[in-house]
Image 1 (cartoon, rainbow, N blue to C red):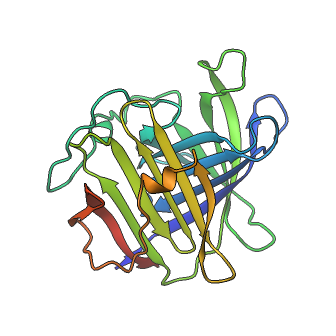
Image 2: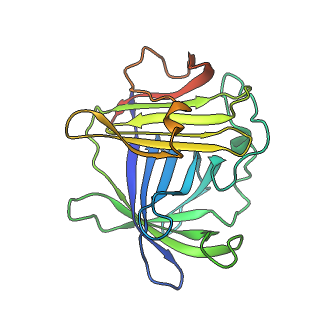
Length: 256
């Protein structure tokens, strides 16, 4: 099965009206224009080596297009900035929809709805977009306030036929909620145990043809969420048992 997928890096962040900057290594794996895993790690300043933001969930296109771009809502099922203190709902077949997704009223605007506008491609002909909206600035004096922002994103080149797989726990256990996935040469996983703990890791496939851990925050996170390769003998939509947990194979195939 061929799957539309994207690997996006952030070039800059701007809190309007201040100048643009970049102090984090940001990578977002996008699956079928719907699911995503997003990990942002500070690489500069006093917070270097810590998680800025880690989230996973569903991407919903809002009704209609505008002259300026495509309106989108990101629904974070897990989010390290808002760790869950409640038990996660057991997802039910055949659709296994998360409550966060089905409860969305797309006709009602939210402060963090975003707009994507195409930009000229990079020198390597990689697609670039400008994202605009409002969100929390954790470094402001009032971090709970919504602040207008701009982010510039660039899509990395992904060879056609590259492995794609995404697994999501279906809940109902005492370990909370987790996502793990692979998209071409990148693997990422996030987990919220529903008790205030959050784990995140990222692996990149190196020039030596082996997986290297890029980030593991906190140390030991790799043991909380397994890695997947895309070579497993599973079918999309199947529920599999992996390291003592039930996982739904959300997507499995290769890039288009």
